Image (cartoon, rainbow, N blue to C red):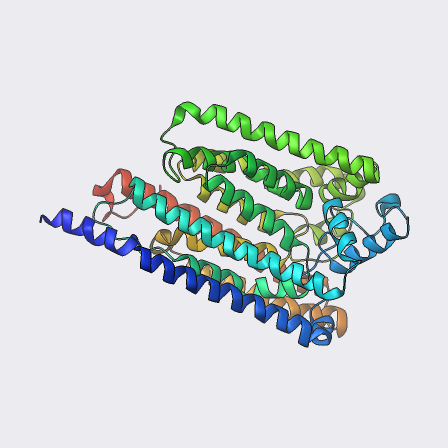
Length: 448
């Protein structure tokens, strides 16, 4: 056997699981998800006072548009025939959540806890299934790779484990932030697209948009992922059906979004739109969070406020098309990049937004060897996450600091995310160069 064939056979043995290995992997995934869910349920049931005292009011984990306390207030108002969206009150979450938790209100509190735990478990399983789809499709279709390269991809159980046991993910569930349900919709949309079900993916994207507005940016890469799933995951080999698939996806998204909008208008009136979408885009509540908006708009003069609202929101939204187009050959990667951009630049971010982005990164394990600033990115994120509670304590509880302290920690945190995004995008570009021009693999990249 020639050396090239030996390398190919070795790669296939390494990356292609047998039937027995697949069964063992399924067992490991079940254990990981079960353990993660039991841990969450145990903490919420056995230590509710500790969670309520130390975590529930953390601005790093809960925002005005994801707060469980505000959700309960909205459910209470609705149950007593008081319009929850009227008059610009404290409830600014999707009517989908209001309807869902109005039904759960009639049941014991444990069912609400189970809903959060099940939602987080669903996200982990869905990410694992995306990893399995990507791994299987890459092996069966060949895909683009570097000659002689042996890729050791993360197994589905490892992907689920890295998501479930991330402290940011755990904290988000413990405070019962409703961003968990947005993660459910985004993960389901990505999985449906990876499986080639574009209509289902579009419906889930519409649901995610109603839950947290910004997932509308994912529509283009999700349409490309579903198109790529026809001829090989991550590669647009069947270009003839590209325009048709994108048109179908956009049409289904628009129809789903419009149908839900009309339903909510019929149930709650047009006030719901002002209290949700308009509230998020205008940044009407300047409660501190781990984002960039709150401090800047606290200090800005009123006559310039509208101009900078537009500038800040377009900063995030403007990335959707160029990122989707530049990484159109790897649309799942484009979607992952946009999830990270949303986490860094949305108006009401929390640590839970970062947890989904970090949960998607193991899908692209082959890029890690190209990343040059992982140590810097990790340290910036750790410093930002570690300093935020300390500076909040100095500012709010002790009074020995001020808002600049906490905002400095959020700047470090956001800069860490942006550094990670830059490094990840550069790694993908370098890998594409090595694939298409393998003779350049040993040459350094010099930018003038």
